[in-house]
Image (cartoon, rainbow, N blue to C red; front, top):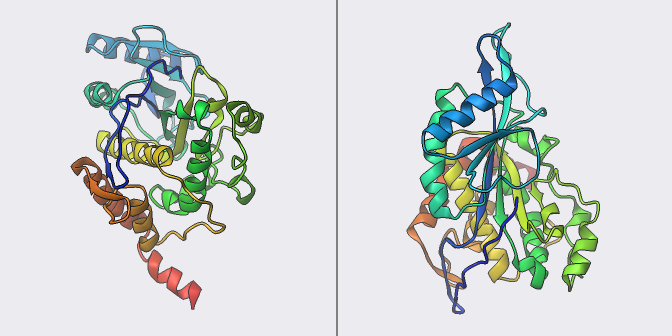
Length: 321
C-alpha cells in the first residue's frame, strides 16, 4: 500500500496522555469466501460486489491479487485470493475466494466507509473460515529517519507476542501466513542506526509473520502490518483490533522498548502488563491519562482474552509448581 500523507505532530510531556493518533493512515485487508450461485465465476462475484459497493456510494474496483496501490479515487478493491479455502458444510457449492482492501485512510474515513461496506459484504453471503485473516497496515514513516522505532516495535512484539496470540483463535499461532517471532529475530534491528542499514536487514525478510515489516524497505509504502487476527466481517471486532494495533505502534514511536530475553507468558497478568505498558490502561509512570476509546478497547481485549483462554492462569500455576 502507498501512503503519501505525512503524520501530524503529537506533543507529549514526560507523563503522556494515551490517545489515538487520528493523523496516522491505516489500510485494512479483509479475507472471506462467498457462494457462487448459478454458473458464474469468481470474477463475476468480484465484479458484482464491486458494482454494488460503488452503487452504495463506496467507490470500488475489481482486480486480480496484487500489491499495487489502489487506483486513484478508489476506496476499496475486491481481489481474488487463491490461498483461501472453500467452505465444506454442503457438497456441490462453489465458492468465490475474496479479499477486500481499503485504500490508505485516516481513522475518520475508516469509520465512515467500512461499516457500510461490511453490511454489503455480509449481505452477499460472505463467510470466514480458518484460512481467512484480517490484516491491518499502519503508516510508519518514522522508520526512515529514526530506525530505532523499528527496534522498539520488534522488542514489544517479541516480549508480548504470546499474549497477542492469546487474543485470537488458537489456530492463528500455527497458521503458515502469520507465524510468531523467533528468538534470534528479537534483536535483529538493534544496531540499525540508518535507514540504509534497516533496509539491508530487511533484505529477504519473510512477510508471513504475525508482524510483517517488509514494507518498511520500500520508501513508497513504509507500513507495518499486523497479520495475526483471524478473518471477520464484524465491524466491532475490526474496530477494536485496528485501535489496539495502532496503540502498539504509537507506543513504539514514543517510548523506548527494552529487550527482554524471555517473552511474557500468556496469562491474565501478562495481558494486564501489555495493556498498562502500551497505554491501553493508565499507569502512574507514563500514561496517567488514557482516552475513553482506548479504555473501552482494553475492556474488549480482556473479554476476548477470557473467551480464548479459560483456565490459562491455573494452567500456568501448575507449570510453575
